[in-house]
Amino acid sequence: MRLGLGRYRVGPMWLWKALLVFVAIAFAGQLLGVIFNKSLQQDRSRSLFSSDGQGPSLGSCRPHSHVMFLKTHKTASSTVLNMLYRYGEERDLCFALPLGYQFGYPLPFNAHRVKGYRGPHVAAFSIMGNHMRFNKPEVEKVMPVDTFYFSIMRDPVALAESSYAYYKAVAPAFKKAKGLGEFADNPRKYYDPRLRNNHYARNLLWFDFGLDHNANFSTTLARRGEAAVRRAFKLILVSEHFDQSMVLLRHALCWPLDAIVSFSLNARQQKPSGGSSWVGKAAAAQPPALALTDDQRLKLREWNALDWHLYQAFNRSFWNEVDRFGRTRMDQEVALLRTRRDVLARACLRDGGRPVEASRIRDKTIRPFQSGLVKILGYELQPGLDNATHQSCLRMIRPEIQYKDLLDARQFPRAAPQAAQAQAPAIPAGGDYVRKDPSSQLRTGELGVGEGGGVG
Image (cartoon, rainbow, N blue to C red; front, side):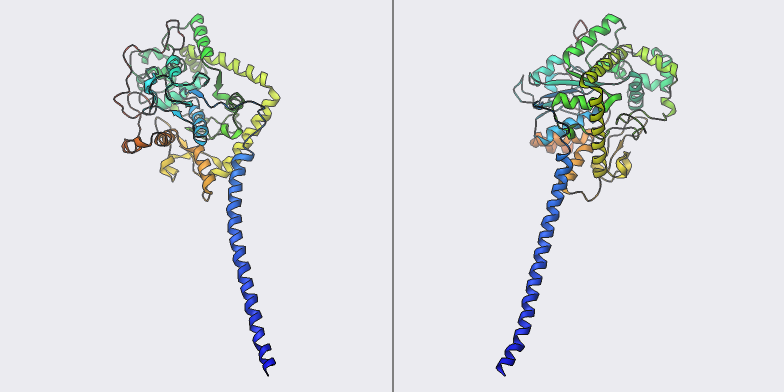
């Protein structure tokens, strides 16, 4: 009887043990699954922004961490600045930031316009790239002696189209003309060199490089200005060949591929089909106010003759650099860059990576600043990104103004509450997005151009 009862009790004990083992295995499997999923997400993030993001070997070169970029106007320079912001932020480098959003522009640059500047080479700055009118002697007070200087240029006609669309409300010469074509037909009818902000209407590149944009054209003067730019800058990019420019810049700076992969910022439209660049500035179908005939385009080149000389000279130099690099090798690396951009666009962005109107962007903190005749487009991030991927993708689409505020708050945390209370930036009479700053004026007589027309 006892033996029978023993057998009767053993049955349920085995069942309970089996059930407990099953529950333990299930719990362990669930726990391992969570850990595995987190690890997989982290691995995907790491693989998305590291393994394929190094690009072809750069040999034994050492990355440049001291970089000065002259951010010229309407040349895709906001996209380039985003690259510098990302690279510096990811490596905790120190930025030479303006007190507002630009270095006292349109006045020539002065070292005291840099936030945290306390005298020549007292503070260690690594990256400088916000708008300024170039003045190298003053820049050299801020940046280390081994700084790599570079800038970017654009065809003056395309630049004029973009400048007219963006600065029509602030440039008197553009205000008076009903359209860019009307201005091109007789620019002297509308242009008065004495009026503030009219520098946007003539030889804007020449002006940004610190040269006298109202000087009468002569071959001697043009070559002198070209020589001054060559002495000051190690590399000049060309916005019409943006991807090739990025390949040359990557090798010049010895930076990984992901550092120079970008999405077009401040774009006025979507990427043109079949285009060779991701600039997004020149519209396929221009608004009536921007329409130009072939004759008007020639007139704009004549009106901007100093800029046209610079652009032609450095466009030739650019392709000489490409030839030295190797055309076949360049084609291969451009293809790799574009493939990488497409991969990141699919992973990071909604709508297949196409720019969208600011009003459609749900996150108001990443809506681009609006100005002028046309809408400035931005991007929306894919939902459901893990935190690391989200942050990396966000860096690539964060607009210039918001990015500068973020870096400013991190670099100068004590000043952050004041910055948060400041008004939103706008384009005032000065012509660019700045916060009003009583100390923004330089001393009378400070110039950025030497007597011979040289930079600084």
